[in-house]
Image 1 (cartoon, rainbow, N blue to C red):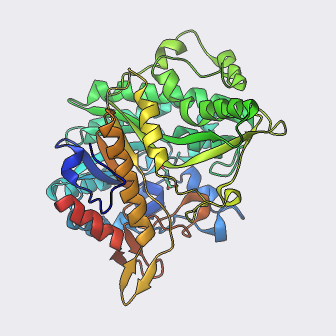
Image 2: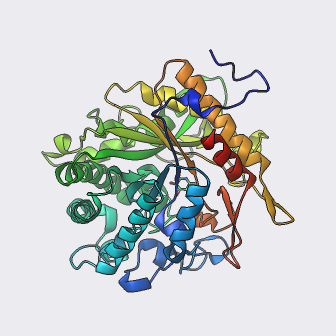
Image 3: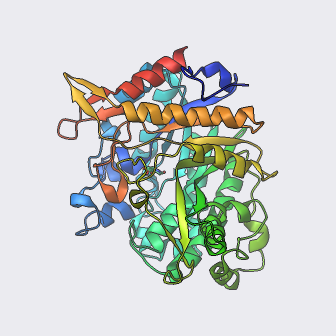
Length: 453
Ligand code: NOJ
């Protein structure tokens, strides 16, 4: 029994087991830049960020960290940090500028170079097929609200599978569907900036069908593939110890944690606990029930915090509202998210309940805090502690008999944090956005040392 509360408690890589996958995660639009380089088409994020007032200070990813040109340097930094697994995403519009049809060979060549560079450095690539940057040409045809997108996505996935599948064995079909459909098609806070149930419900159905379809395409074309998909999740707790808030927890939990995983596992959409989802049924076609299901080799969960909710009749559809961390006077990250490592334990426990999940990995976890720059060194005590405390919660879960097979830090370098622009810094490596100079932070040095031991 590992006593995580005894101090000093030193984290040991060995305690996580010999097959545990250690890694770091990034996403194309957040780091690459090269938004119009070598025949790339525009994505919804290229267009969204050009519109006034959509992101803090009008920040955009046109250059971002310039990973497009500096990938060799960044991959050597991953090696320097002793990180054996690198998860990155493919910009769909780099490969298919119009989303479908004509292939841009320069885009394929670019990802081939990135993959080969990883392999030459002894780093295992993990490919995310969709991390939110839909080709804008497809958004013009309705994007995720158009049922045709299932076919468009299959075309994209098959091109990636055929071109990269001989060297890439670890695949993630989609990243955090709740966030890109919720923020992008319901709240209008992320690209493409659409709002309302009329956009959200079809987007949810088509996204779920596309995730399962993408899994099937990979299975067909990639020999020995390890196929997964990833979900955001938050531990949800009631604000008050009253029945109404417990019921609010049920609804928010169905929305944040169960909406996608359950239909993919064959359990259907959680409409009993969130009745507004019944609208999805009306759009379903006869084969959909079957086609929603895919047998994934692993599921990635990504946890950052917990949510505290209360009943609120004023909120349409969910009749619940989040009680902001700031109001609760708890420790916060730059994102305004509560620092609450126990949520990691709770999420592992929660997802372990599904017997259909074969393997569970933490495919993202990390925190935005301001860095302290002193004489060319970057100190980030809070980030280091955040990561360590989350790892302790993983050990606690393992100790209680739950299986966890990997942990990927979000993220390698400070980068474009969507609507928040470059303000929140999540990286193990600091980026000076004027010069693009990289400096390994204290947290990065700690992770390197931990992984070496
Ligand atoms: C989840 C998303 O996958 C990633 O793109 C984002 O930057 C981090 N969480 C932090 O918000």
